[in-house]
Image (cartoon, rainbow, N blue to C red):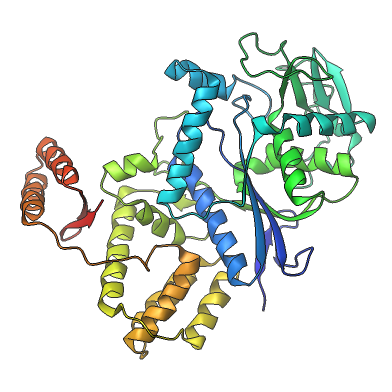
Length: 455
């Protein structure tokens, strides 16, 4: 059957065919490092990690590039609002450069906790200003730009198929009141000068004046530098489709005069109980650290994400996380029961698993195959070998599991905390949890009581 992926560009599932046999160029949109990533953001990186692992499972050599947006840009894709990096600097009374370093590390720490494979290349926007300026010069020479109000704009009217990724309709274009310099509604800035923000800290000299690049430009310039003018897969969240990725395609294909990326893949939002998506600017901002404080291991969140197709909205609730935590603990217990060496991977179940995850990353079905193995007539050694093989894609860290002896003092505190929770003495419950953590253990709540894991 081969590997099948849903391509946003065609709106259909397609059999994946790489440009170069056996090799894949993969670009994934990374974070703007002005704040912690929230768990909605992190769903994207789990999806992309599964994609990379499935490509490897299918014996492709993957060259993976992820950008780090450490250049200031506006809070809206549509060139509106305030500079995100400056917003972070003001919030914490630091320089934008300090903010970028701190939150880049925080993001990379989150990826490690979630057992996400690092890209082959981290590409920082501030390290690639020269490449971005060069791309503007190419677009300028080809007649795709204009200058107004001190800024360089991309003229979308010059590109016949602009908006093809999002199926945008341009029958009624209007002049945008928020930026009177735009000729067309969907034009976007390639280079900002000091005229945009007097307080902008990140500026570079350029043929267009002292200033800084627009957001969309960095991904085109960096992806092209490391993956070429035509590569296989570009990923991100669905919020990137209508503007960011649409504009990446426009400027890249205008510059190179040909198709830029073959497969565009996007994950759906993490949805809260009121039907709203999580956002850094809202009250619903939940980080991985907050989940840990609530007693949930980062890999519980990963398991939670694997239970729903990346193309479906994922409804978040603590109850759902508790359920995922119970399932993961059950999985750990079963793995520890059968842990052994010398087993062989079951061809039958490997084929079923590979077929499932190769059908547009169907991890819910992949998990079902994994649980089926436990109930099969395979011997324990073969069960263990087979499930560890699956975990190469699932990324749940099953190989390193060890039985831990829980100290009597920790058990005593855990029982006291359980009683406090039954009495609804939340303050004492929180205090006891911190005491348990100080002894090197995390405690999570289960339907029947509690679960203890080494920090």
